[in-house]
Length: 495
Image (cartoon, rainbow, N blue to C red; front, side, top):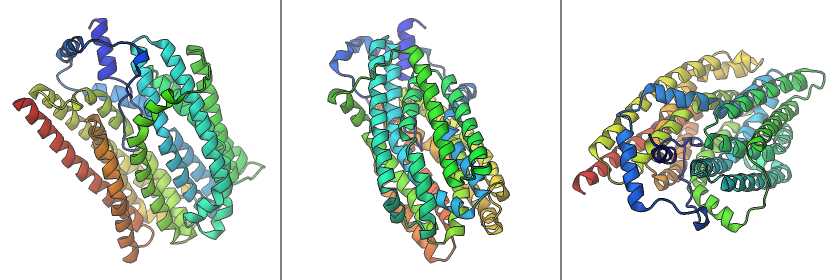
C-alpha cells in the first residue's frame, strides 16, 4: 500500500481502541478548524475505494489473536489486583473480606466513569499521529493528564469525606462500616495515579505500543502482591488497610513508569486546558458515561441485595465477584477487535454485498472465538470457586462459594459472549441504542433480583439473576445486530 492508503487504514480500520465493560469504543470527536485541512471529499472517496480493494476478503483467526492477546494484559491489571487483595485478606479475616464487597462495587463504578479518558485520548492520539500532527498530540496528552489528575483529586476528596455515608447508603452492615471505610479512603488516594495510568496507557495504544502497558501491568501486579504479603501477613498485620496500601502503592508505581515512558517520547508541558479543549471530550464521552453508569448500578444493586443476607453472604459474594470479573474481562479484547476491524464497514449506512459478507464472516469468527474463550473462563471460574480455600479459612464461606461455582461459571460464559455482541453494536456506531438499552435494563435486573429474593433462593439467587440478565442482553444485542445488518444491506441494494 502507498502511504496514503496506509494512513487511511490506520485512521479508519485498524485504530487500537480503548474500552469498558462491554467494549465501547466511541468515535473520535470532531476536530476544530485549527487541526488543519483534510482531504477533499472526492479524494477521500477515491482513497476509501482503494483501501477497500486492498482489504482482505475475511478477518482471520491469526489477526484476531495477534490483536487480542497483547490487549488482554492491560485489561486484567485491576481485576488481578482486586483478586490478590481478596485472596490475601480472606486468609486473615472473614469480616474484612466481607467489607471489601461494597468497596469493589464503588471502585469499579468510579473506574467505569473514568474510561471516557481512555476512549477520547486513544482515538485522538491515533488520528493525529497518523497525520503527523505531533505538536497537537503533545498538547492533547498534556491537557488530558492535567484534566485527569484534577478529576482524580476531586473524586478522591469526595470519597474520603463522604465515604461513611456512601457505604451506609449501600446498606453495608454496621460491623463492616469501619473496615470498609478504611479500605475505601486509602484506595481513594490512588485515583489521581489511576487517571495518569489511563491517559498514558491510551497514548501508548494510540501509538500502537502495547508493550509499555504490558510492562506496567506486570510491575503493578508484582508490587501489589509483594505489598500484600508484607503488610497483611508480615509484622505490620494491617489486614484490609494493608491491602489498600499495597494496591495504592502499585498504582503509583505504574503511573511513575508510564510518565517516565511518555516523557521520553513527547515533551510534556502540563498545559491547563481551556473550554474548547474540554468540550470535544465531553461530547465524545457522554453516551459512554450514561451507559457505564447504568451498568455499574447493576453491580451496586447486586452488592446491596447480598448485604441483606449478612456478613457470611457478603464475604462469599466478594470471593465470587472477584473471580467473575477476571473471567468477564477475558473477552474484552475480542470486543475491541470487533470495533477496530469492523468499524469502517459497520458505520456505513449503505453496504455492498461484499462488505456485508465481510461483516458477517468476521462476526461469526469473533462469536466462535469468544464462545471458546467463554467456555475456558467457565472452567476457570467454576474451578476457582470450587477451591474456596484459596480465599478463606472460614468453612461456612467456603461451602457457600463452592455451591455457587457452576452458577457463577455460567454467568461468566454468558457475559463473555455478550461482551463481543456489545462490540458489534458499537462497531455499527449505534451508541444511542447502547446507552438507552443500558438504562432500560436497570429496572429489569432489579426486578429479577427482587423475584429471586422473594422466592427465598438465598444469596446465590443474585448470580442466577446475573446469568439471566446477561442472557437477556445477549438476545437484545443479537436482534439489534441482525436488524442493522439487514437494514443496511437493503439500503445498499436499493440505493
